[in-house]
Amino acid sequence: ASNTDIIFYEERNFQGRSYETSSDCADMSSHLSRCHSCRVESGCFMVYDRTNFMGNQYFVRRGEYSDYQRMGMSDCIRSCRMIPMHRGQFRIRIYEREDFGGQMHECMEDCDSIMDRYRMSDCMSCHVMDGHWLMYEQPQFRGRMMYLRPGEYRSFREMGYGGTRFMSMRRIMDSC
Image: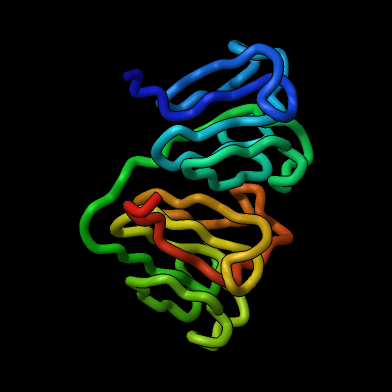
C-alpha cells in the first residue's frame, strides 16, 4: 500500500497525466503542464490557483474533485500544501485591526459568525496559538477561504486579502 495522499490530474474528471504526492508542492508545473482535477486518498490539503501557495485557496479532504472551476478557482491548481493533523487544543486570537489593534477575542472553537458572536465589524489580523484553522469570507463557513497555521498574521491585506472580510472560522480537525 502506498502512502500517497493526493493525486493531481491534467484534465477534468481525472483524465490525462497524473502526479501523486503527500507533501507540499510550490509549483505544480514542474510535474504537470496544467492541473484541472484531483483525488484525495487520505488527509487534508489546501490547493491554490497560483504558485507558492498564493491566490484563491480551497480546502480538500478525502474525496474526488473533478473540476477546478467548481472549487472557486479562477485558474487551474498551481500549488498545494499538506495540512498536518493536530491533536490537542485549538486557540486563535482575532483582532479588529491590522497589527493586532482594536478589539481582540480569543477563540477555541468554531465560530459561524464573527460579527454576531463578538460584535466585531472587521477582522484584519490574528495570532494562531494552537492548531490549524480556516477563515471564511461569509458566515456559516462559506465563500473564499484562507488557511492559517500557527503563527502571527499582522495583515490579511498584505497577504492579498485586501477586499475580503472574514466572517467565520473553524478548526481543521482530525476527522478530515
